Image 1 (cartoon, protein in one colour):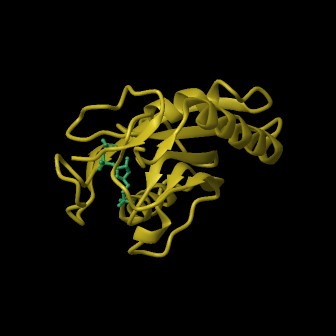
Image 2 (cartoon, rainbow, N blue to C red):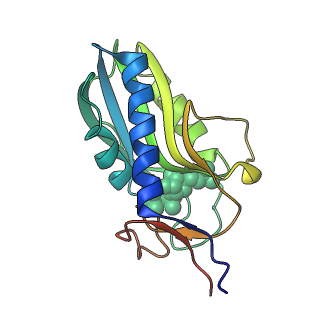
Length: 172
Ligand code: PRP
């Protein structure tokens, strides 16, 4: 029996709908800018916003990287490109595929707060809570996951496997 960690496509889709319903409850009738953190979040963001009807959805992106082709964070978050919309006075939800050490989201939170949004929250599909190096938590969390190397549903290993429609543990 293989003991590879897997989150099925069905489980992910169900969870994404749950998060969408939570966001609809919190922001019903309001306008929200969803800022997807590239590259990893592009699939989660796309599925999430397609499940939201009761909120006026605007989309923007930001791109940072810290892992490069490595499986270990370099510890330095590099801003590859910034948001393009004016976020001042707007509700913003940062959308991430995975919260790991927390370095990326701490950096992004500080960066976006300087743009004076009306509110700023964080949505992550996966929370690798055991790995946290800095104290940061997401407002919307899909799954708390074990400290295993995960790929699929946006997550890569050396840019591969992002297209797999589920999440699986990569073993060498
Ligand atoms: C991954 C992931 C998060 C970050 C989380 O991005 O998408 O942005 O790492 O890790 P942390 O909590 O330890 O900072 P990566 O740098 O691999 O870039 P990518 O999204 O383009 O794959």
